[in-house]
Image (cartoon, rainbow, N blue to C red):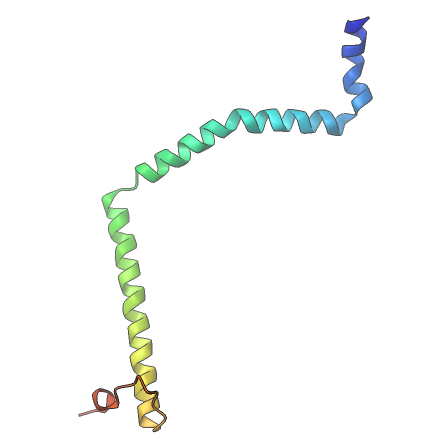
Length: 93
């Protein structure tokens, strides 16, 4: 009798419940693999990749300083300088 109930249980519960239980079981089983592979990826970043990332960040900062300098020069040329602008440095020689 118990075996008959167990065999009919999936049909009674419907496909969505069984599918959800199965998906959850797969997620729980694959979680340690995903966590471990993420740790390995982070640990295997090469020195050249770190150097490239640092170089990109330095270039981004340099571009930002250039944008700020051009904006300050433009404000000084239009006599609309901010209190923090140093217009003597911004004037062409």
